[in-house]
Length: 126
Image 1 (cartoon, rainbow, N blue to C red):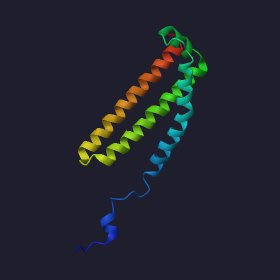
Image 2: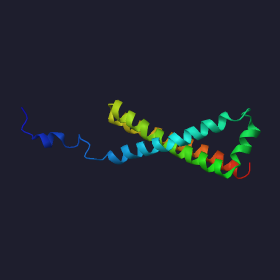
Image 3: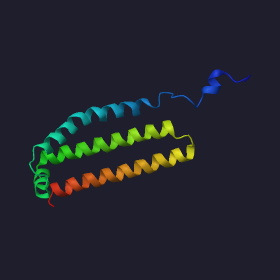
Image 4: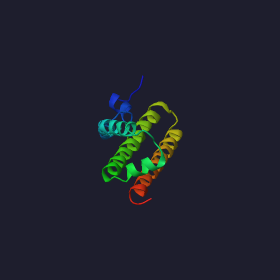
């Protein structure tokens, strides 16, 4: 039998409404990814060949470049949020959890930055 109150035992273990912003951002990026993903897939399907010259010409269009940047921003941010939740839920060791989250976020940031840089480089003059 513990002399601690239920509130004292639960302190530091509950949500305390910290995850609401994270939850909303995951939903907002998911909603943004629906039309962006559909646009991306249907845009690529309409090309008879997906060769380098065709893709460069396609990315040179300003609206395509902007849409691709938005797609990559939403996709990599959504991935970072989702992987963070999986790590928090399934990794028990706090040290491993922290390192995993930091490494994953840095890797996804680097991949997202590389994707956006590639789009902008092609769009502005490759």
